[in-house]
Length: 136
Image (cartoon, rainbow, N blue to C red; front, side, top):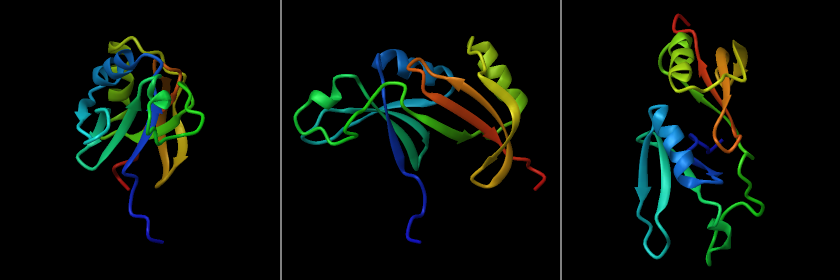
């Protein structure tokens, strides 16, 4: 197989600034990507090699839009590996006033069994933070 990794994916925000503020409160770096000949793109940086692009609700109406045919706020469901402990995930969500939708509990993720906590962002996207056992 020629695929190496996920580079980025895109979510659509009903209120762009509210969504960016939410992810920034969770510790993500927010950046504005310069794109010659196209509007700047809001990005949520996961690490230097991975990001989530964020389209505002008006993006599909722009000339030259290249994206999902029916982009919808709240249509995403994704999992991110957390570097710390599950207890740190729970504490972060609590500090930010974010209610967990499920977990912590065991889940089967890309590398096998891990412990996950699920929550929703302001657009109702389902976000999963998962922690793998470091002893493995």
